[in-house]
Image 1: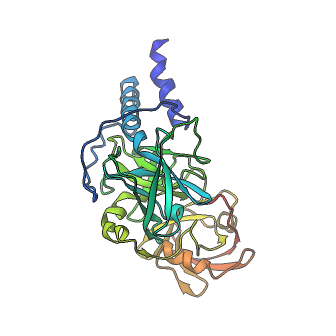
Image 2: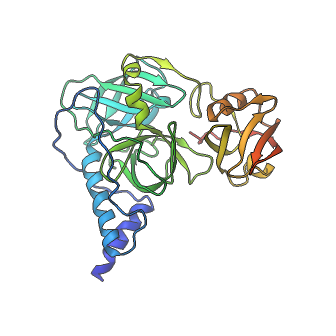
Image 3: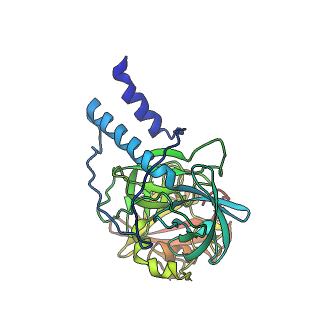
Length: 344
């Protein structure tokens, strides 16, 4: 019977059950502009035996022990979200739509229940990245920044956050999942996310921070995270309280309609990654792998361009898409639907 325990623990994690354990961690000094460290990806992508499962289980437990003290709840006015501390002096990464604007006084709740004062800094609206600084003096537990350059589909990842908002009796909730897709602007995983998780951290099995939760994707099994590299690449702008970029789902200015499709960058347009079951695009016959070239009479240069063009329309309107499907040009008519309130 003892042989079954690693399997049971492993699948409990993969189904997104709460790890109701609080941990403490002694941290090393770090500058306010965090350095990054590489991912080793030593854990097997597909466990072949009991030893592989034990290895993954141990790696997840190590990640949780080190990262939970740095995971915070963000209390910004009437809204709540999550965040993660990345420096000893209290710099915090979160999603842009969690803070919504720069130079706001807010509060954070640490994993041990302490409430601290903080201030919002810059926001990249096009990526959905945001920066916060704890203003109460002190040394804070923090996590190391990883990099996205070595990420690959199938890689195991660990997500933490406060789904449904902060609860005093519950530590940050842990979920295990895998990377489904990754590019310079987004990371897609099958880690379950709901409102309140936004801004929370995504880790590789080395315990490196590799992403920040942004929103639910085109279907519930695909969730979108901001790549950590976008924070390091724009750190100075964020730290200087700049706000820039176009609107994105979940942000002010985002379109109130949806097509029900998740796309990624492609040299010719926006490539369809997945679709909501029975959503507008699926009903219209759009397929994964299609490359959206035009919406109406306007060229689509990528996901951001597609999103911006959709802002011109209302729910119930039918739009014409020109797509490349396996080298052939097709026309698809999609009747847009209202964007659900929980699609963040």
